[in-house]
Image (cartoon, rainbow over all chains, first blue to last red; front, side):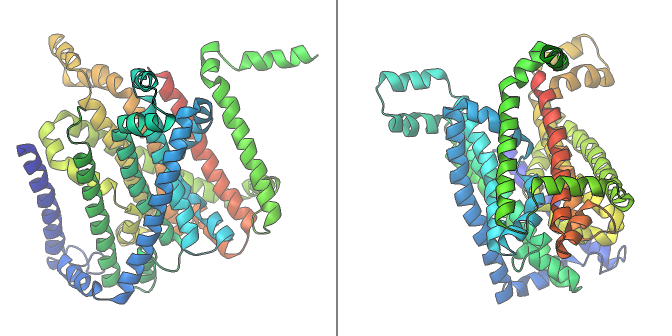
Length: 252
Length: 260
């Protein structure tokens, strides 16, 4: 427990320290306000941001894209993982592609996607879904393959139906891997969606940052950047906590 | 005649052990690629905006003889290489420190995990005034490439069996000797995994930055041909980037699997 406390205190401490450094840096004139505004200015803008409809629209758009991508990507990846486990040949054929496209390089296909589908939420959702599906598929397949053979022998000797064997034995056995895959799926969907919006889009948090950069609205832009960093940071922490809670009591 | 033609082909495919690893998978994966190319061909017939594979290839070869295009290729390649080298060095060094010291890990690990989950590309406008147009994309590539190496090395060092450290102590190995002869060989697999991810992430970091703002580079070529409606050139450039990072990843992955 002492370790956890040290981690929490030091993480908060490092963030506070960095913020203080930025504040002092601007006040002391080490760099210009336009390069990196004082955190106090950013936080002031951040507070007004939360009262603006524009911000909530962008956040809702990004949130929608990410949520849809997680749901479909998670299901698709899970199904693919099951197939790779049941039919190892298919798994082996797909493996090189999944391993080397470990999610992120797919962002480079975004311009092709917007030519095909148009600049809308759909093109972001499609690619973010694939990005979320890849870690999910790999983790599900690895988790199921790592299961001791005796588990499936047990299922057979109990004459479990295929469905029972899957839901009562295989999926719980691969649980830790599947949960980790889901966590990666969330992270990749978020990173991918924001990166694509940042390239070109009509709305969304990533797009807004680019737009504010282009109209030289520095304070607003930094408020948005900090907001994206804070939101995704909170999401990462929440996911780690949920993962730990789900896996509590397992001998890992 | 046929026997003389096939024989050198078989001999060229290397030792039998390697062939048995590649074997089925190589054939299957190639078939899948062919299938995808056919799908692409059909898709390009249905919509007018996407060029066919053949057209893309011919545009790519034409581009590759163009001096201006080659300059863009070089700019991107240099940035990626620099980002990869710096990212791997910084990530490997930090990962080593964190792996060796339990206290350091307790202090910095949560922050590193948080930063890894953050969409780093949004920091690009912050980097621009600090590192200028040419430097920023390298820094962005470093930020992308850094984390997989860091996390893999740190985990790898933690998982070194205790008996290795005892061995180092009993032969009175110096710090450098321990590093070179014990730590590196022990973590070569996770290190290689990290390096493999770092290569493609460095490409993504640099090209995404070029999508946003830069003077020269393939990312700019892609976005420019997009806005000019020159889709064959756009698709050809994207395929060039994807194919190269794919080829490097696959080569490293094969190497990784051969290390047991």
